[in-house]
Amino acid sequence: MTDPSVFAALQAENARLIALLESHNIEWRLSPSAVPVARDLELSRLTSAEKVALFRRLFRGRTDVYPIRWESKSTGKSGYGPACANEWRAGICEKPRIDKDELKVFQELARELLGFDDRQLAAALTAGEIVEICNDNDEA
Image: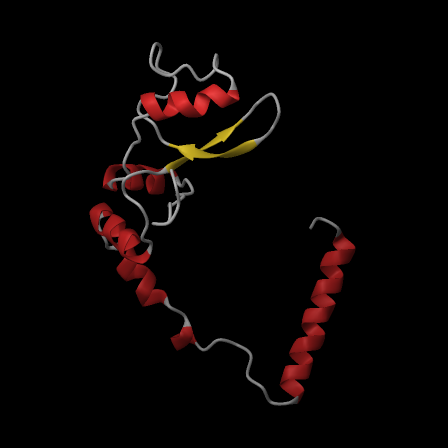
């Protein structure tokens, strides 16, 4: 939103709405007691392990598998696939050489799905990555 006219129009609309609220004696400013400063301070005092435990309590999902995002540089397509310990390992994963129909059968034989533990969660949260959680009903 770099267009100055759009910004000016929004400021004018904001001023009009504030005037309307004030003409009806409606308080629109947050009181200092409503600002949740203490909560932010409490959260910052948590250790990394406590933050991971809090995340796990708030967001539940499968722990036997987790998805990894992929993106094709040639086509621009993207998606998610299950994390696999054998992915791209020579002699085990033949991903680039196998056609799409054969790949499903081969993956079932060679695939070793990785579980999602606190180590992966902490690494993702520290790096600021988006953590995709598989629901209990999702198939790997």
